[in-house]
Structure formats: C-alpha cells, structure tokens
Length: 112
Length: 112
DNA sequence: TATCCTACGTACTAAAAAGATACTAAGCTG
DNA sequence: CAGCTTAGTATCTTTTTAGTACGTAGGATA
Image (cartoon, rainbow over all chains, first blue to last red; front, side, top):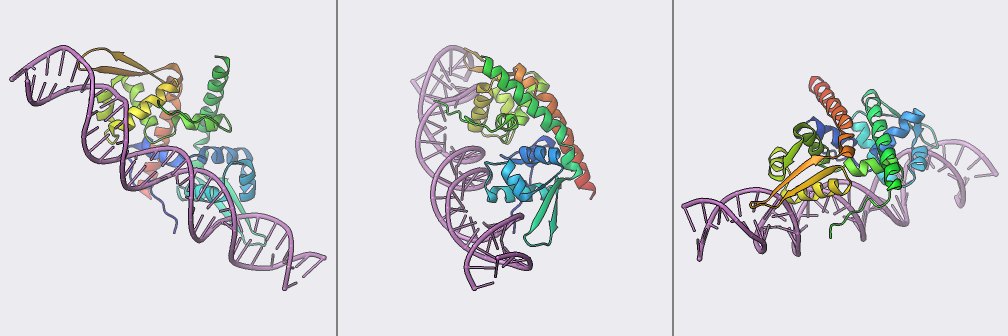
C-alpha cells in the first residue's frame, strides 16, 4: 500500500508545490520532456544521484498525481516506460523558466 | 550561527529547487509580490499555518539566498520589514504560473 | 514597578524525507 | 540448474524538516 498524503493544502500554490516539490520531481519531469519516453533504468542513470527506492517512490507519486504515465510491458526481463501526461506537460514551461533562472543566478554568483 | 547548506547541486534546476522548494517559500514570495512590503507579524497572519520558528528560518534562508530584503528598524516595539529583491521578483512569473496550474488542476479534480 | 508588545532566539522533540544496502521475480541462455 | 537481465521491494539508518514551549530585549503604558 503506497502512502499518499498531501491530503490537505491551504491554496492552489500550496497544492502545486506539493506536487512538484521534492528533491527529484522537477528533474524527472524535465528529462521526460526532453526524451519523451524513458525506461526505469534510463531514468536511474540520468538522475544519477537517486536511489532505486527514491526513484520508484517519486515515480509513483507523479503517477498518482496524474503527471506521468506508466506503461508496463509484460516481458522478461521486465520493461517499464515512463512518459509525461498532459498535466505533466503543462508544467514544463515553468520548470524550464526555473532552470533558466537557476542558470542566470549561478552565472551571477560566479562573477561576484 | 545559522546553518545554510544546499552546498552542492547537480544542475541549475536542482539549484533552483533548493531555493524555492520547501513548504512555505513559494507562498511567502507570492504574498511579498502582492503586498510589496510586509512585516514579520503580517506574514505570520497571512501564512497562517506557519509557526514563528519556521517563519524566521524560512525568511533567513530567502535572505541568505538573496531573494528578499530585510529592513530592521531599531524601534521599540521592534519593526522588521520584508520585501522582494530582484532575484526574488524574477521568480514571481514562475510562481504565478504554478498557482494558475494548481487552480486548473483543482478545478479538474473537482469535476471528476 | 509590573505588564504588554513585537520580533525574534534557543532548546528539545517529533515526524517526515532521504539514503544504503540487500533481496526478489521470472523467464531466457548456456 | 546457475547466471544474466530489469524493475523494482524490504528493511534499517541517517538526515532534514517541522513543531512546542519557553526566554529575551527594551521602551510604553497602567
């Protein structure tokens, strides 16, 4: 039984942050938007600092929140593909904005 | 000695999320962009579910990251005003977008 | 002189998130 | 039947985050 909480939120901003907050969600969504489809193992390599447990957990949360799609192929060895759903796609423009902001900040920091 | 970490980050997106992530940062920035200037006590009332300790801690982090300005008036009773700095201002479009996304999602959820 | 006010600071504690590491399923190949 | 592969699980420990409760300064007011 996967535990899903963010049961209550005080406003839409709070709601949104509960869905994209967390250490890896932004990066996972970003990579999915770049590659369109990624397998579990590929995500694990790209988001290199994530542990399998955290990856599974994070993907499940994103799936439960309707941001990504999980396609299971009943093969051996197993194959599972992840892709963005519409709600997830809609988040990409501002994840991108945030990325650019981060880059600009890093550049400024470097200069000071 | 205030402990500041987010010492290491793996990319600009990671960097950015470490600055705006956290339970209340988005909301604080948002309210500051709406009201321009807010005192500690005002923020405490607006972000009604925050404890004084978390508010102080969060404001310190935002200040250390250069997102907000803290103006202390040496009066009694004390008066401290908070406002956005440029780096913080630049995050507002993103936060606003996220807010709208959250609203749309909530509306969709309500319908299903 | 006691009490109030505002914006904190400081323990200490509890809860949540994250991390490390080992293990499983299940069929194919040699 | 041992070993390989992929996509996870399970369990335990550590780290981080959040919350409670109380303390402080110092002028204003009763």
